[in-house]
Amino acid sequence: MRAGQVCALAAAAALWSSCCLAEARTNSTPAAGTGRPAGLPKLYADFLDSPEAYRRVHLHVLGLDLGDNEWWVLKPDLYIVADSYATADGATGSTDWFPVGRYKSYTREYEDWAEGDPENGKTKFHFAWDYKTVLLHRADGTAGIRFQVYEKDTILSDDLEMQFDVPVSDFPVAGAGWKTFRKGTYGLDSKVRAGSGLVFRLMVTDNSAPLVSEREYDEMTYSIAEGPFKTVKYEEHVLELTNGEEHAWQNGKDRAVVQTWRHTDVDAAGLDGALVWVIGKADAFMHPHVFKKLFMGPNAAFKYDVYLLNWRLNGLCLFRGFYNDANFNSHNAYGSFDKYTEEVRRTFALRAELGPVKGGAYKRTVGYAHSTGAALLLQYLRSEGTANNVDAVVMNAPLLAFEQDGITEFILEDVVPLLSSGKNDDVLSGVKYLDGAPDDQKVPFLQRGIILSDWVMKIWSAVRFPWHARYMARSPVHIGLIKAIAGFFETLEAEKPIVKDSTLPVLVMGSYGDRTLKGEDIAERSAWASATRDLIMFQHNGHDVYLSSDPADTAAALEATAQWMRHVAHGGNATQFEAYVADKPGLMAGLGGAAAATPAPPGGPVFSSAPSAVPRVVVMLAVVFVSLASTQSL
Image 1 (cartoon, rainbow, N blue to C red):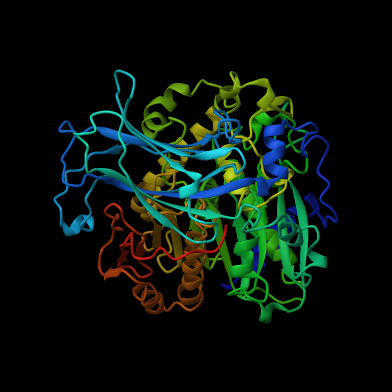
Image 2: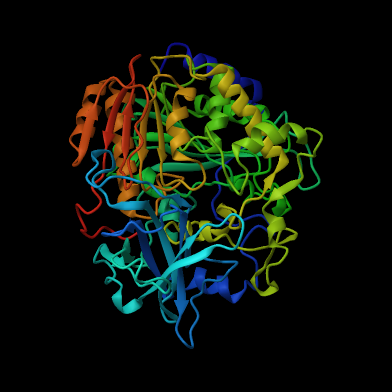
């Protein structure tokens, strides 16, 4: 811990300790109206209650192999739709409003690459996606997966250029690993496209064997005294925010919840430190697998006490009944992130006030944040500085760029000023998009009729968090959030880097497979957070790199984090981290570059390390067909 850290934080804690209600919950009974609604539509009840009835199919779309043909002289833009289709008398359990069995790719531009060009890995893909996702469908009513490739037409309707089916009988056996396909059955102009094919892989895993079960989640929270983590004390602390306001859609003023996990079997000397975790927007604690790998338990790499912040209107604020209208889940009522500095500050102060259960002072404090939570953490570090607060920072897909639901940075920069007179509570997307949804698929919840989010449900299929722990529907986007993001980006660009201390270890992680934030922009703008940051970019991980569709990618992110913490955050020996990276198969290393290289499609993880004043770059290029070995189930 840095000099003066305990005194400074303890003094800050004294200013508000009387406002902080600390309590240890003994059961998982949610506030009235926030639990799973009675009479859930059969579509959702079957999905949640009978996961064994669903097949989990992992899809890895590689690219379009043109063979010996150079078709489409006009070089169009293409996208892919993969959709589960039913048997004659069956149902897939996936609908237009709940498309858990569907994948629609981003649009890919034609690339005129010469065969054998080393910059593209000698690929023949003129259209390369290299994207992983997961499809879920009822095993008893699904006949297979139908693939369609469309040409994007900005004037007329999109043109169907290819279509083929993969029947269930061709799927790999569950647990057998990846199976590669090259399919080229065309309905139109087949002679023109003869010899071409879409190259992709499928893998089937057991949907009844998730990465994190309901029992494992409970053993990390409300039943922690009865399971393998009984030497860890779990509590929840409510922060009554002094700068909070009261709104019609809230039950009282703004409040936040801090979950704490503190070891009872060792004193401070036996701990590696404390970790302050700031969740993302519409996020929640659903990471027992991360805790087990990194922070606690017999197989963890380290031993950390964890202080996890559910900032206002997010995470366990639903559990506690702090808001009463689903339209305002994760809402930013202020058009700014400035107010949120209070709950981040008080979480760090709570860390100092509580400390290790058996006494002493933490050796170090690591700040961790995901997505929008990283914006809050950076705002806090900008306001408070780093000298007496943190000893290392880890950011997972930080909000350094934005493009979502058609809202681009052009809109943020050029349209938001026109919204200055607009109300922060006005919804741009989210609940309003349900106006045309069928009644038998709507769920009455907190004054609204919501549709469960297929994106959230795909995560739930791997990590079985309870209904009240995380909002299950698509999170709405309000003008208040857009204003806040626009203002935050202005601050970032004007004051970059936000972390001024060039000696502070900072790790930024992102993914080129992120469909929420652009991985390329995260890589480029990571220096906006810290000029001497270490950057790890993955090719296939999800928006949360620890919650990826392929368990192998999740494992890779966890291992990379452990190695960085061990060799950089703890020891300051960056050469050992470089050695770890250099030892990876298919790795090419180069030193002295300030920017992270982007992988040539089909690409691979990109490692850029810069703990010294001169950034270092290490690039990993994945060889797509190196291994088809089976991996563990999600």
